[in-house]
Amino acid sequence: MNTGIIGAGSIGQLFFHDLLDDHGISPSFIDTRLPPDTPPASITLAYHRDIGDPPCVPEHYQGIISPVSAAGKQDLIVITAKAWQGKQIYRELASFLPARIPVILLMNGMGSFEEAREMLPNPIFSGITSRGAIHRGYTVFPRGNGPVYIGSPEHFPAGKEISRFSRAVRGTLCENIRELQLRKLLINACINPLTALRQCRNAEIAGAFRNETQALFTEIYPVIKDQGLDLPENAALDLVFSVARETGNNLSSMAVDFQKRRPSELDYILGYVLKVARSSDCELPMAERLYRTLKAKEKTFIFPESPKW
Image (tube, rainbow, N blue to C red; front, side, top):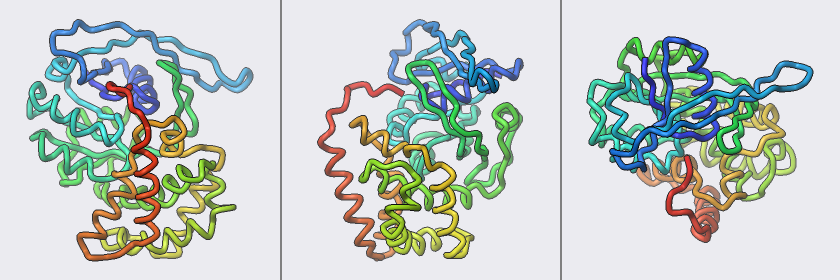
């Protein structure tokens, strides 16, 4: 099964190495910024696998980066790029991707599915993961081994390509992926923007900034609850703080983006919550101030013309 991964960042590289363990799957990276007639390029990747003592060893593999025209030769497309890169990716894919090929969106936040559906007629599945990794170039270092869930927001049954990918990445097929997305949205909306603003690790969300986090949660929870979140308020708050503690030594992806002065997924996390709230004439003054502060700071960053993914 040919599987094209769009997004050679931490999660993309992590899943690339998972797929290599299934000898019936041939993964490759697709870069939608490359002209269609660009010849495929070979790259060397390294995966640092924990083995105890010594703590890890690098395993080297050969990979291929192909242009967007290679999308039509795949059996499955998996997009692990940043959510803000999605629109351009879908636009490029639309010219080369046959409608029969399924697509999995493994991107932070919410709103990406709706954007993809506007441009692509393909079967589109959403995925979420708590697995963590950091990467330097084409070297990935796993950080945590959380679950992977994949499902169809439109309740389409998973075909053989989706099922095989899910098994290869040790994932779970989920009939109600939206519920899990809403839970992750709540967690990310409470943790990521505050860690980006304060440039702190996740543990401080449940520590030094606990009161600030709880105030933000109080605004955000009713909005996400109205979207279908099936979790009582006390349990939802406990979930936010437990995740903050369990990932205490980590910097959130948004905190890292602001630290490195690059685009973040703010619009697909806190921005998405505010968009939903505005459509219901619901005011979230603290969330609005936090969003505007971070957005103003983000606009001062000088982005490269071709951000790496």
